[in-house]
Image (cartoon, one colour):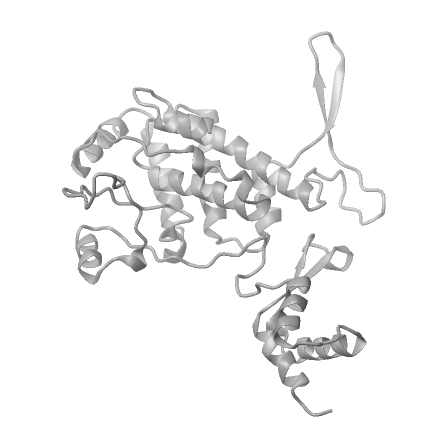
Length: 330
C-alpha cells in the first residue's frame, strides 16, 4: 500500500523509485510467507549436502553496545524467483519481477531519473500480479483491491504525457537506465512482452454520455466484450488488445479442478451407491495409468519429489472414464 500511495501521490518526485523499493520488499515478504505456508524454509544452505542435518548460512549483526545477533541468511527476491518458478524462465510474472529487480539495483548505485511513464505498464502489472498471488495462495480475505480507487489524471491527451516524459529523460544519467529498459524489453519473446502479467496496457477513453445518473464514470471492459467496431477503433489508435488466459493456481493447471475429496463427492452424485473401496481404487489407478493426462501431481517441494508431500488433482473428464467402468455388466 505504501508503494501504491507513493506512485499515485501528486506533486512528488522519486515516485517510481519509492514504488520499486517498496514492491521489492513486499514481494520478498510475500514469497517468504508462501514458502513457510508450504513447509519450505527460505534460507541459504551452508552446504548442499543431502545428509539429514541441514545447516544454514548465518548473518551476524553488531549492535551499538558491541553485542551481536545471529540470524539465518534469508533468500533474497532473486533466489525466491529461482525456487518458485524453477525452469519456467519465461513466465511473465517472473520476467516482470526480474525487470524491477534490475531497476532496483540501478537505484542503489546511481541516481534514477523520473521514468514514471516509461514503466507504467510494468508497474501496474506488478501490483495486479501481487494481488492475484495473495488471492490464489492465501484466499479472498487477503485481497487488497477493495482498498483502492482510481487515480485522477491531468494529461489531456497522450502527447502531453510523452512530452513531459521526453523532457525528463533528456536529463543527465538517463542513458544507462533507458538502455537497461530497452535491452530488457527487446530480449523478451513477443508472447511475454504482450502478456498483461508483464506489462498491463490500458486505455483511458472519455465517455460523453452516461445512460444513468448513478453510472460509474470509469469502467473496465474485457477485450472479449468489445464489439467489432470498438475493437477496430482501439486497434487503429495503436492500442494492443490483450486476451485473457487461464492461469495456474498454486502450480496446478486450470483444467485439473478436482482434488481427491471433490472427485469422490462428484462421483457420489453421478453414480449413486458407488462404494469407495479397494476395488474402486484399483479402477482409479488403472485409469490414471492408461490416461495420465487426466491427473496432475503437485509436490510441495518439486526440487525433490521423492521426499516431498504429494497431492493429486483430477481433470473432471476422469468422471466419465470411471462411469464407463461402472456401466459395464459385472
